[in-house]
Image (cartoon, rainbow over all chains, first blue to last red; front, side):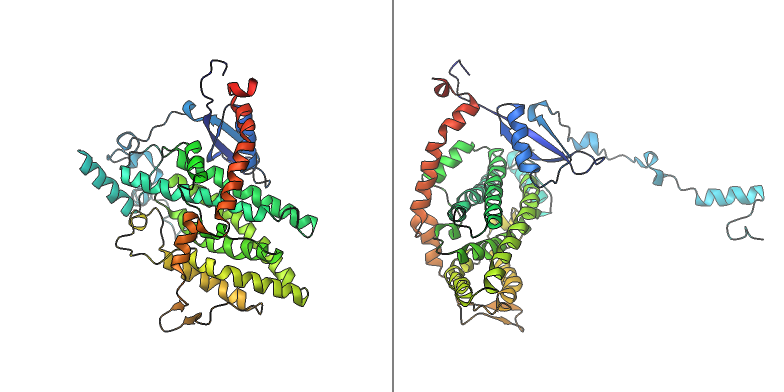
Length: 109
Length: 305
């Protein structure tokens, strides 16, 4: 900061992995002038009880966010995108009856 | 949508149990209320280490010294996490620290009192932290989501402090008659401030922090919960709670107690407690003495000169 501007630091978001293989979960954030010091703070806040397997620090301004419900939760029927959107029980029974294969419960006979 | 409609929709959202993130739009009233609440909490964590810090060099064993040092580090860490939450609401950390040191903002009443013996250290870590965790657990449901998330982490660490405090108290209670007396004297000193700590009962119909779900439980409800959990644990050790009116009313389903001294509470939190000025002076001296560290870290020109 040799230009005489006031000192400034940035906000870094901290992500923590609890155990090997776990997802990285957002934990909070720290304020620091660079990533080295941000990681020191993150370690002191989120890793001093052996509760973390891995930490990430990401500059907040490097994150792009989308939370628009019109895009993420559109009010249309999206059931065709989920397994539960397909109700096959009665169709399967009808298909089996048509084919003459044993229905459930009669399999032992 | 005009501003009023937008605010109405916002309040309907939080009253209905909805959550708010830092970069969501929020009315100024809500922002100011959350900021005030979180800032006071952060101040309390920062000032709360000073009474305990006084005992690090006088801890009776190495293990106690390590535990106490760790607790102090935890509490300063909580202050940092909470100041971050507050900063994102728009008030810079430097300004919050300046306001604290100038006596413009408050911190919890219990940190305005002296610590006379090692018994006080046990009672503070056990019961002051217990009274605090009762309210902090309720804040995990706060409508302001960054605060609620931070409280989950803080509560987890506070539960360690309570065990540390209870262990200190139990060790003394299993010791000599003089040590048991030390705990009783500490309890006698701290009971008044403990009963004041959650604040006077508020009217749920007008308490905005409650209506907007910034906090989820009222002052009196928190005090009742504290009494229900901790009075039996105090009594079972053979200690006497210094309040002849204290007792549980089975019919009403609530604890009766002598009305706490609300005038003392007001007096203490406005900077007129027995240690208020000394503790603030320590904070000011410490802030000035560590300025070079902040300058070095932030690369301020004065540090290079």
